Amino acid sequence: MKKFYLIIILLLFPTLTKAEEGTSIDSLIISLKEQQQVALNDADIEKFKQVAVKLERLSTFGERDWLINYYLAYNYYRMSTITQDKGDATKYIEEAKKLILKSIEQKDDFVESHALYSSILGLEIGLKPHLGMINGVKSGKEIAKAYKLEAKNPRVYLVDGIGALNTPPIFGGGIDKAVEKLTEAKEIFEIETSDRGIYPDWGKDEVYIWLGITFEKKEEVSKALQFYKKTLEVNPDNGWAKKLIHKIEK
Image (cartoon, rainbow, N blue to C red):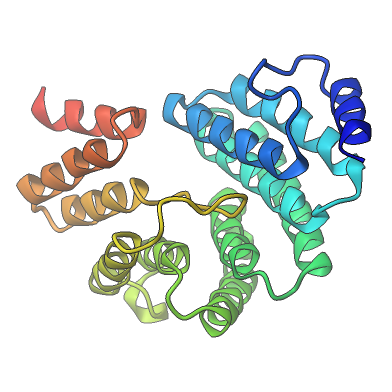
């Protein structure tokens, strides 16, 4: 059986690196997860596109479909946040939405999918403001479900904090709530195991960026700078943090 999978992998992934050859399905998922992080560090759309192709091919295996669709949705979600073209951003977020709904349909009790869906809905509001009320309600329901599934998941708090930062206080958001949620996310990230295998582990560096952004909005620039620099302690390759630091220090 192992030999059979190796043959299939080589057929579907003609451009595999040496490190990827001969790996199991789970090992390949981990490798692609790592490649996504590199693409995010570099804010590189082309790298994300390459990962998407591999994930789409991997989805034909018929194993862990819900997880592969999650990572595909996450891939397009990230692409929507780094492209400078609004048309492309809209296209990517629509694809992310379609894929995350597919993941939820396949495995409704996976907390990460509900958290990501909440964030996707929030991003869609920025691209399509007329969906504000509809998506706002849906996003709130998804994050509530995520909390119910796993009360101490750091990505749930991170997504909730980002959402709060972009939601007016009159609708339950605001800077104070963002600080509360992001601080909780930071504390949970600090105790989350460093090796989560095939499962999502993104956000450990990003939480400090969002805390920095939040404190910039509070006009506490020195504190914001401390958080941006903390990001690089967690992930020295984070290109977004480097840009934010340069903007303050130039």
